Length: 415
Image: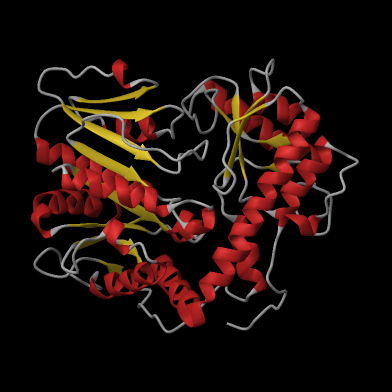
């Protein structure tokens, strides 16, 4: 951990120790936490409908690992039934064709989308057998730290503003990452290079994030029709707010069996199979949401409306507090990206002046790459946290706690 990261971590711990009231239940909030990507909004919605610990008939022995069936692995609990349940979910929400083109595709779960991404980079490196240049447009999610952690000889990572900045070395295979909607600014992205391989990070590409999924479908179809190779993956943390389940997954065509085997070898070496508890929880939630099209109310109405409302409130409040603010953020995706001219270290500024922890483009806890001075607020934070932040920026605000959580009904339904 570098010096700056340690500095913010120590400040946070000292704040908790000295103030002693940094909790939500029944007391004041001294430290407002709006930085990490926890999906507390979903927790609040699920709490309202009695779905925080759902059980809808999907059962896996919690003493088992989830491993591929023979001949690809020992197969204690294989991927087949998991694949079937996940495919039903994506068929219902109408985006299965973006991720899988055939029922016979290989299915690979992982301990979150980051695990899948790193396994994919490792697998491609083994398959290509030569140097790779992996590029990503600014502002960018910090994939750099994961790629460089692998320490693969001949693999470079480069961010760019203009594709003209990209220069391939001798024998390098160009791989472009396309994050859409982009994290951290929520922008709809497209590919910008003539790469050999494209990795689409579409973990927020869902209707309830006010995102036009057709844009992704059109781009991927265009690339594939031109003979390009495209990979993408899914995260339960982002899709359904199940951050603690650690469940991500992707499909690969049968023609890509070498890559699948490469990824599987990394997967087995790094986690010895997926834990069944988190996967079971995720699959039960999917089944519950599919009952009576329940997801249309919870996700397309409550989550979407809450995110849109929060973005509106944050925009209005931050503009009032900082009239010269630059807001580079789209309504819907769960992050709010902004810059206040003259404030070069927003993480430090908001911690010291408003008791609020946010993430920024300085070399802090999660170093987004981009223009210095930008900050990102997690719009999926708990209602109480966001409400407290708004009150600190504008003590005379007319907004109430209820404005941060839009519910179709307050029912506390049984599971």
